[in-house]
Image (cartoon, rainbow, N blue to C red; front, side, top):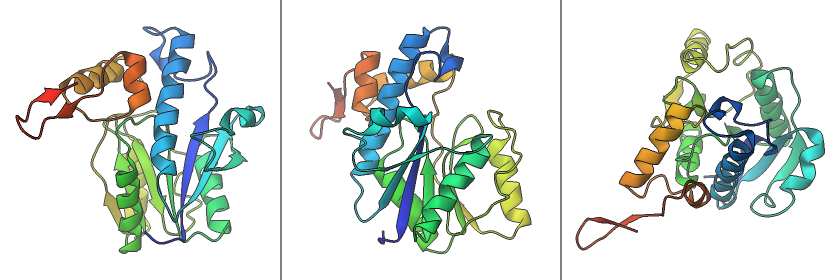
Length: 234
């Protein structure tokens, strides 16, 4: 991974009643904010472990800047989110990263517990190897990562966000524009009670996703596979 790549983390301050509202119920607004805080910190910790990479954190609301001054966010350049909807905010964030001199930009959120530093590295490698775009498909029809090797102002315009057709719509636009694209493995986004139940189930079965803060919040111990017996142990 070369030094002219950039990573953008899009996030909100973990304020009760402002994040993960689709998880309420079964969670209370305060619990949903606590879960989101853990997901966000796990994601940021994976990102800051990457070297030779410019890292931007675009946050909302603007007055929440103070929340992101300490670890694990201290390796990021902090900027305000700007735009009417998610597509416009992501486009503006990527434009800012490209304007800083980056030749490849990947954008992530804090909804995917399985998003690792290695997966981000793989996405940027796809762009280095010739893809115009790269996507990390979410199992709900969206995406947990998007990467581009050049600004594309219309790619995310007018998308029906939070629907099962998000990724299909964006890929259709790539095809129509003649953009070569690559797909990463599909992963689980945590947006609904059903996805949270599925995350608990997967965590009880094995060591992945790692996300230690989220595991602790859910009361599920980190687990590993014994190299001797092959059994999962705490």
